[in-house]
Image (cartoon, rainbow, N blue to C red; front, side, top):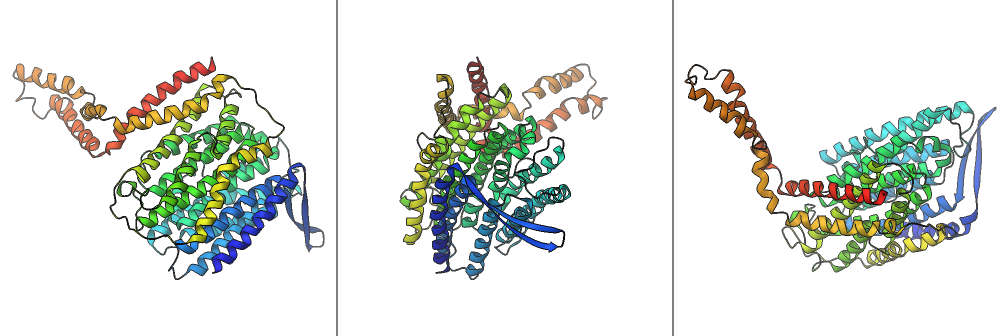
Length: 556
């Protein structure tokens, strides 16, 4: 019953904060509390209430209330469930403290609280794998925590804790430390390895961590203090790092067979998109996409958790499937959330991604950046379709159990959040950009439709690309180079009678022996590589050339 009480408390605050969000669209206030520890100096705890903090925290409360109800079902029978619920509640409180903090002193309390409590949640299961993942998570995030501590002492030296009132182009290194801290918390390259490792936590924790709390803390920090850090954020380096994060995470999602890891890679890809749009200077678009992403990604994680529950804990997508006939409710939630992730028209993800696509083509970052961004958007569609195919259409009942899901309260709460996920895009765009309008050409307006078409075409090419697999010997024989390099040399030597005198000497060592050995190694390597890899290589090459020529057409 404890999870019901906490969920009711959080949902009530969600309603209150959402009303405040609508009320503070044109203003806000700052609550300051001074604590005098020294005769000549005082520490100020400040809390800011405006449309940014109230809007984001209201949806954090909504997702947390659903996660607490869901945890009662998912963690049923766990001996330490009360400890788990209280630690999870402390995690939410740390995130709220970070959201409402406009100065470094109170922000550091929430920032370190997130790092500490996230470690406790990742190592919740008492096994070596969870401990290793927890250590990787906490040690990687300590780099960002150290950067925040350095910034903390620099602010103390300058006599002000407030980031909102800070703007000085000459102190670039201070903004660099804050940006480094945000990059580690939001898992940007080269600090991305901890995010898939954090999947060792229970699935309800992952749905909260990967949607609206831990991984979005860095993005929120940059959005909140954008004008103070704009001299660092509007740089080509920051743009390139976010693009590479988005690109590589989307590409790696092709080869993941773990259901939860695919969703984790999609989170990393969307974080790169948020960072990219912030580097373009459109922080309001990044905030809009962060809220929409939090809603549909939480639903996607919860539905995947239901699939894992029905698969008796199995997470391999090749050994599961056919959930349409087992759990129609989770399948409906999964379909809407994955379609929103793809940017399907008129769902919440469409409104935010469409704005980002249109804004990215008009700021002159160059053909290379735009092409990488375009490819990354296609990747998000392809891995979503792949997860959709293996989860719903691919029938393989190995390890699948016919368990009954009877937690009606969790179903009702997920219906509420699912409704928000469908209407939030239109509703929030009407509120945030009521007085704004964008004039774009027909070519730019058709980009979203082109991405959908390309993604679907390349996905089905990846499924049915059996013809090109016959070229496997082309790779294993080193592009047939061993045939016309080593073989003629051996024939030339034997023809002149030098075969006995030169045996095991330079002709054989430099000729057929080296090439045959290398080709044997490459044959063994390529025969052991997964069948799916060959398809993705050809699909990726085709995508690259199609996108390149399309970008040339758009730029002209």
